[in-house]
Length: 343
Image 1 (cartoon, rainbow, N blue to C red):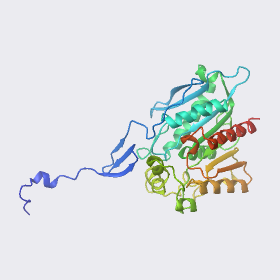
Image 2 (cartoon, rainbow, N blue to C red):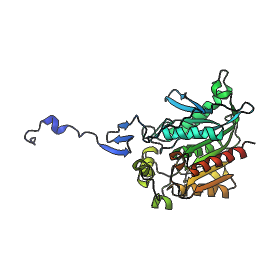
Image 3 (tube, one colour):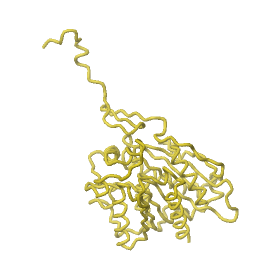
């Protein structure tokens, strides 16, 4: 068959250029040939509120994958007592964000100041380049890094001189809350795996769980969504589905054990000894039903779980506006949780 007039044989046989198959806001694009583009700028631009009352620095904790964590401590810590340690794993659907995004940085500054604790905010490998379980493994590695500091002959004294390794709390928001859950399952309660580090409890902030059957809140979507395109995009059902599609192992479903705590192949939480857990969600968060079901089942099984829902609040309301009254109430809850489980 002859070529169309004016079309060279080379042009006729050349494959079409790659096209976008997934776009997450202004920060991530996935192309048909498998290539990935990521913005070097955060998807949310807000001023950093650093008044100097908190000191912070970045530390490499995984040289193989070039992963860093950010440490925060009060500029004037108490001299009579050591500080608890509070891990904060950022959200982003396992696909976007990092510890450096300004709203996460602001929230960690706030947590450090209000909790009077050392905050550890790790990064983890992102999907789709690194699908689950990569993020969970990195979360575990970030906690093992703390154990290494606790037993090191020459530790980082910037950290070790002010902390109490026996009072560690692990938290995260959204996908970070999922990481916290999976660490709770992996570590169990009272195991000596991290000695002399002792995890006392877990705080899940709007945890990102999934499942093959939609909940009512997922089906109906968020109500009274914030009037900024980026936030609406992050909150709507469409993007939740896309995040899972990009992050779960190829060929798996959202009933994967790392995604659905009650999936057909998930660990039996009823028979598992778990440390105390605080679950916090917004009442208008499309993820709230899964978080509520999680807390309800664990309570039924005799686990020490507290569930708090803030009426009318959206996903990540505590990081989007950390100075709002509901966000302040979240920190009060966390403070009480730390105090109650530090003995």
